[in-house]
Amino acid sequence: MEAGIVGLPNVGKSTLFNALTQSKQAQSANYPFCTIDPNEGIVPVPDGRLARISKYIVPKKLVPTALKLVDIAGIVKGASEGEGLGNKFLTHIREVDAILQVCRCFEDPDVIHVSGKVDPLSDIEIVEIELLLADAQTVDSTLSKAERAAKSGDKDMIARVAVLKKCKEQLAKDEPLRKLEWDKDEKKIIASYGFLSAKPILYVANVDETDLKGEGPLVQKVREFAAKVGAGVVPVCAKLEAEIAELDEADRAGMLEASGLTEPALAVLAREAYRTLGLQSYFTAGEQEVRAWPVPVGATAPQAAGVIHSDFEKGFIRVEIYSLEDLEQYKGEKEIRAAGKLRVEGKAYVMKDGDICHFLFN
Image 1 (cartoon, rainbow, N blue to C red):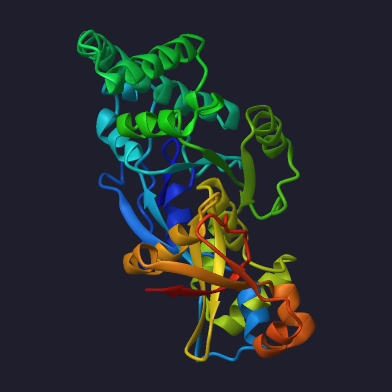
Image 2: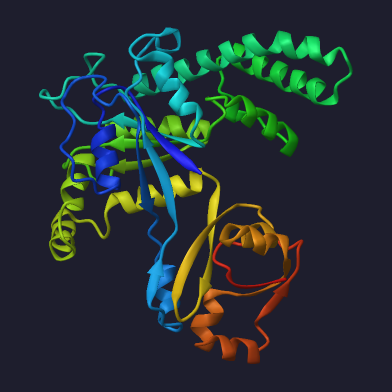
């Protein structure tokens, strides 16, 4: 699964992307549309539980889970009608699973804002409207075809017509599709059309060095808006984070301390993006490695096994599970087993965040 970094031009998207992926390449020039093709990067998701597990099961390496990020060039008002680089950018958004919208929450006369003023709520509205308009176009172009096909009695087409009509009603109210409740089958239909406003969203408030905790009035506006729509907000100073990412470990720690940070804000952002994608982690632990594995919330044990290898899911027999808390209490797997704390679960088991697992398969 992957998330796309979106926003208006010159809000700090590429600076943020380069910091997240610890890119050493030169920063893009200060003008719109400098990122024409989407850059992609793999970002580790920091998880302190890996180190906690390794205190008792000492591995050769620790392997965090990761997420894929796509840096998508700036959207402008009218993109759905071809303004700027228009539909090309919207197509790139269509291909990701979640949206990270960077909102500019800092003043800087040297960095030109495409709208001529710094207003994060206006930026959010512009992007949202373009997503809604693009979705409305998709519905208009597909609904009539689906209705004609449904006349034959095709159950799949009848279901698609129902979903498309529900989407049309929502979009007519200028409301994003992510606000609607969908069952499992409806979600599959939604995914097949790649509706933009159905994708979960996380707002990234790009602040300056004087407001690292995001307590200023511009960020508060974003927080209030996000609370109304059920979205998260992460304040990040992309400029500072880019500088921190370029440092070696020792210098990085010193700069964090000097800035009053316990960890890079990018670590918080990676974890929040992970959750926005609907993911959680389970662990495998042995002498070779202690590894975090990504799995969708609600996944069953066989599906989790399939993340490691498809054969694990096909031949799944059972899974042995214990918790990190049990490991810290009993100090080892042998002791956990002796205390009767090792659980054996079957195919119907729904994975919990933080499960430490041994899969048995045929």
